[in-house]
Image 1 (cartoon, rainbow, N blue to C red):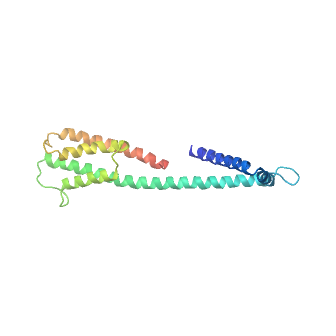
Image 2 (tube, one colour):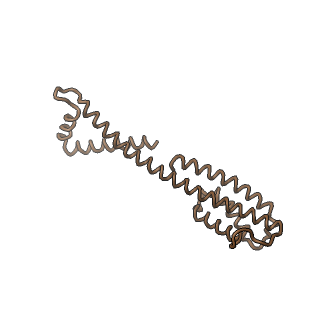
Length: 192
């Protein structure tokens, strides 16, 4: 689709240049036209036509190459971004499941580094928000993560009483995140 647009744009620009040239100096336009397309024996000069087609092809290849280059850069950036966000989401969900296990089994210790599991959850949550803009196109990924975080930070409800609901939200988050990253992968393959 973009190639057709570029081809038509180039053709329109060429026609505009020729019309403008014709309006300013018709004699020079005729001279150049005769020089390029007519031989001394009033026959078609194929070398001139071939030259113009070659120049048009070079211009087209230049613009098309730039478009593909930009698409490749976008794809690579999107893939790198997806790798980072996927790890953050997995860590967030894993730590959340671990926190549920600790609460359900009345374990009083925090497993992991000395910062504690809740601190890691908050850190991962904020990193996810920093990496993923809060807009409609990212709602599939962010809505459930925000809901899980609200359970964690909402002090007036009992975390243990909401265990089954939280388990459902975690499962839904995994499914939605899988679909989200699949969609992002398709965008990356297209270079968007």
